[in-house]
Image 1 (spheres, rainbow, N blue to C red):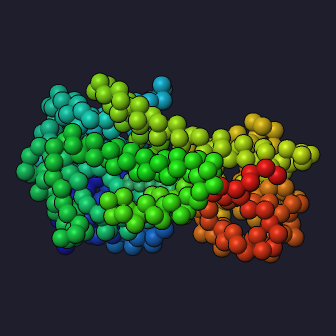
Image 2: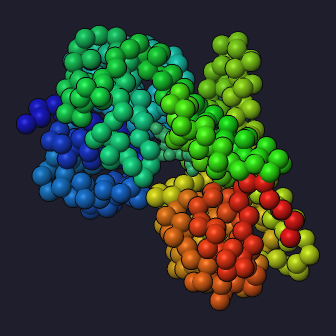
Length: 438
Ligand code: UDX
């Protein structure tokens, strides 16, 4: 029996997962979001985005009466012990610094209703110093004791529920024992000897998230940089990644080359971290992080130039881009390298069709379709742009009766290329030294 009452403000990918998983574990949860449509779909038991396993947990939580959703900050918050702030922190107007205005607004609204011995816990990604700014803001309001903690999230889309239930670590930034104890109580069931609870300063906790995501981004850009060298020198990135990854100091994850990283976190976090580095006077580090971003952008341009070279003798070449989301197993199109590629191909006048198993629909008017046969009909080049498992399982023989030419650019390196080559397909894979001319 969990006695703590929890509120979760902001019900996007992070907040909805936080609210639903905690309710399913027995906490009494109030979820708040300004978006009425989101609230009404959650009340009806519908998760407004795709996240494996979450809809089932929502059903259980609703049936047990452990979760309620509302668009109003109300006196219901007066009972709550822990308020989690999960609102968005987009990049600001100038595209570099993370904008914390929604976090500050949420904190101020919570403070209007919260009881003195409750705590405000930020989960959103913010630049260092935001937590203390909130502390000063709410202590000025005089209504709530200024206890503030930071608890960065490390949930990956597609595996968010499992990441929540079995975290690698739980990081909390706290200034007092009371906050630490309450947070320990929230997470204790998910922790064991291999899943530690790391308590640290507010600034460390704020930076832990952007530093972790920037490191992951750097790994992806590193292998993508290696890929460009491999393309020019006849080496194979797949072989190189194998050799690198077996060194335990490097590790084999996040070494898949492709179109680059995207999504709601990595691109934003590394830009924000580069800006923080610049503001701390560390230009060398800021430039290193900027290099990671530049390498990332380069992959879409390289793919564009490969397709341009491949099709230079074709009249009105038609391209089918397979995948629209930023990675497989999500419906999220934010900062999707696949969509960046689509836009660049359109800039160059290509006739482009887009397929996605999750973000696509069967509406002929829509931009993204979910009917693969229709999308590939009469096209000159197929391009795999997202690492969906549906594309890993693609068979050449099931598509070749529809296409105009048997050419595939496998940016994510996911198809079984030998079986395609055996059926006379021209297969080009990013990061492999090969003949890119058509
Ligand atoms: C990320 C972090 O992993 C998570 O801990 C954090 O809290 C939120 O941000 P997510 O945005 O869901 O999660 O995506 P992630 O799985 O990290 O992938 C990010 C991008 O890198 C994707 O576009 C993916 O396709 C790309 N990627 C990842 C590669 O190109 N190669 C790889 O080897 C791994």
